[in-house]
Image (tube, rainbow, N blue to C red; front, side, top):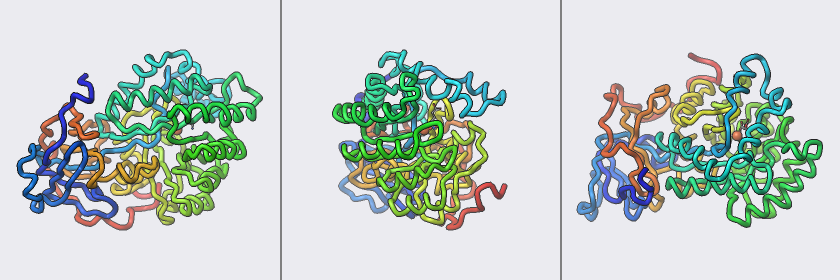
Length: 443
Ligand code: NIG
Ligand code: FE
């Protein structure tokens, strides 16, 4: 594989582009004949090609071949670095066991902990690299990677170091999240408070001092950690000036989202059982609701997150893979777009904002990622597709986009592939302001 630093520069003028609606920011309209100018890896101009300043005429030219352009996609919730896999538990669940039962029987997260601890950093890197590559091939330009399968200082460190190394190797923005409070490690069984003390007073400060932690997360659940334990972890994060996120209300309503919002959380994730009070608290705090339809689907959950209420309250909604070996072994963010629309009834613009603008905000990256804007690093994707709804429409078709990531042409498909689908009905100039129906309704 060509090392990232040796990939061709994307500097120059990109023309014959169709900008997707919202690509330039909230409520921006589609642009049918656009240009983007990249200099030193950053966007210095974007707009209608007819308005392109003459000064750029002598820069290298890149023909976009009428591709549809979106900002680089962002996968804002993953557990990408781990050893082993858990197909056996999938089979157990199909035979009737629940996720909680598997966890209580010593499987679940703890079985991935055993496999992760047994792997070297090089092995963890070699396992995670093709997973990351699969996501990058679909236009991902920024990704969050959590720890949480080490559950000791040494092994959490290994996971986070591998996450950083992946970012450098692939030239992709990686935000690391310390999820030491993911499950109780076997050596602490019956001593939950002692483990939380270790997380707060030993692991988190040490890993933060090593520059390995961009945010802190907790699995707040009956099979995870209590509300009081979650708050102790949040306090420790606050002392270190680290932003927090939460695995919240996935299997039951623990009130975790309201607590997280009180600590100014970047996001609350899963939230199938989120209450009205939780929604109100998130709205007040500006916390993003991260929807994880892959886990909902894979666990055969039937309790939908309160999409209509989140929409009505104006809480920004992001969409992510939650890639992990237990509940969401998917490596396709586009498939998650489809599921967010089909299962959760997001509209296409909501789903696209969910993997761009709102996902950026869920990582605190809203000033540098998630839209195509001047002065931001050049992260954008040229899709050989007729209309933006196709991003959510195709199932398992890999559209092979041209990806400009961190100012380099990072995909094998360059020059851009010709349009695969003749645009039949042009996308409406104005998106319907009202979604088609309530979650679960419609066809
Ligand atoms: O996001 N809910 C907790 N954490 C992961 C699952 C981890 C696992 O089962 O390995 C999630 O779904
Ligand atoms: Fe998760």
